[in-house]
Length: 275
Length: 268
Image 1 (tube, one colour):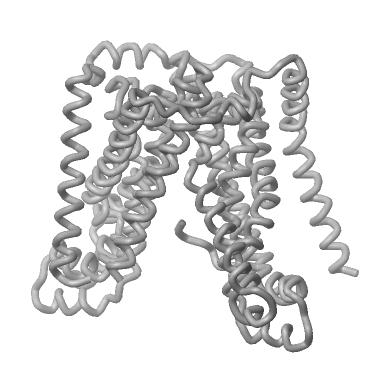
Image 2 (cartoon, rainbow over the protein chains, first blue to last red; image 1 turned 45 degrees about the vertical axis):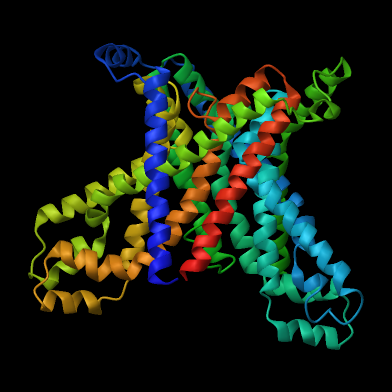
């Protein structure tokens, strides 16, 4: 990117940001929705700090377990969704070398593009939106949360799976082809064994994210800690809300630790730091 | 033998975890199916065709613009919030880099580093939607709590990731700057930030992609734009309008993803 293009991009960014702040500010003030924090709010906030009763603790433990259940159910459903999507979206299996010469490359390419487009479409809808829809269709509770995480994460896993499968070294695949292997053979004996570590490692990393996501979908009615946080907010029980947030934080830290340990010890997979 | 034992015990653990996790969802699905037997409140056909009346489309377009504005304002404000904490949160600047100027690291620097790290961890570990619940209490409904919530969570993430990027840069330019008599902030700006800039810009763009998804679903607490319309229409069971809104979310998210990918491609 040359100097001038960079300046234009920067100017566009600055203008868009300024316009956003201006628009939102004007709307907030003109719409009369904005209210500045005043003493009354603080007083009622302070009044809501009441000690939780005896029933709160077992219920919180149950909610934390529910969040874990939703995350595991969600990620297992996501794996089931991801496998067919990943196979459709792996270029190597459909139209790239070493399969190009046998059969119709154009049809293969069409299949591949459909797979990629389907994954992009499913990824574009956030998991909480899926959860809002499923809560309406399936009712309040963990089934809606598991379905939402299953679809949103299935598309994400599918994309990464297909990228990992595509990055299998070519000579390995060509050797298998040379001995008369079919596409299924190349997949089963070439790609999957070679990429086993990264595939499992990335799945575990996604499970960490699924714990967070299951708390988020809980907020819109899919059960677990998120739902309890929302209830505490609704009834102004700030002490409850603070405790639930701390429990959620500890749960997230614990899953990170477990998943990190498994990734390092069992799969020798590099720890995925970002994304 | 040992291998077989390991594989089978792992399989038992995984299957037990799956059975335990799926039990409540399956029970709930059973209830839903029984309820559906008594008559559905919805059917797949009810979602089609999408609502295309001019009035509703106009409302949707305004909500889309507002959602875009929330995501942009939230991301930029998050960056601005993370900025002052970044210097303190970067280990090479605060502690290990101090030998460039003096021998001993004063105690307050350790304290400032730990404090900045802790503040960023708290910002980051509370999800955006929960920040939204908290801000709605203090500033009322609308787009403002959504922007603040996204900004605070994003600041926590930016603080951690950008500090890591700054710690990974090559030290030689910084040492050269110190040799020329540069001060701490100057070394930070020209020695570290300059080197890390492409990675930082790329990460900010990625975060914008995350935040547009967040901005689109804010709304069940009365904050935000598209999410609020969605929440209303779902509650009123106006399925054709829900279809339109889902399509709108799709378009807005895709537009941001494509813009961000385009900028990133042009940049490198």
